[in-house]
Image 1: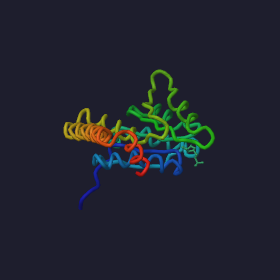
Image 2: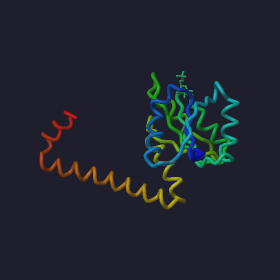
Image 3: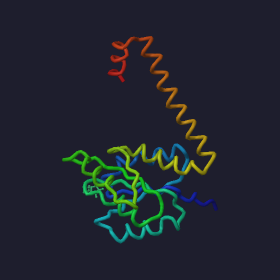
Image 4: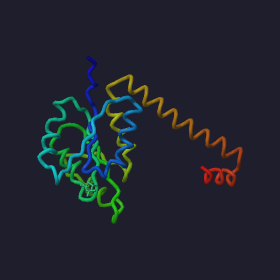
Length: 178
Ligand code: RP5
């Protein structure tokens, strides 16, 4: 019998309505073949579940927690208060305040209990940061991160070549067609 790999990264969110935003973090972890677990955990609607998850996370082998929440967005900060693991907060865009509320709530942590906060809606960067935290002590993963950075550089340089050959007007038109 083959057992599933133990998850290293916990990706949690306050509601299933956060999943479309948080999907980008899951996709990044899949790209780097790092096992994750995904869970809906609400600081307000399932407070006992949040406490239990956060307190047991390191004992279960998780290394990093990514927590997305919108509005009052207490989940990342409360989880950070309950676990010694690094917590990365993703401010979820909201209907009326566009996620500025989520951002301010998540980023304003008191001394002693940090949450590494990414830009509003940028679960992709949260996934990458979690991968980089793991990679700091996993040489194979560090090489993958370096390859990813090379890919980013190559893409920019390809664009530069196109910009120079097409001129900016045609380049803009080609962007609009994409
Ligand atoms: C927060 O409230 C969740 O993280 C979500 O972003 C927001 C709205 O939740 P739903 O009403 O869509 O379940 O706790």
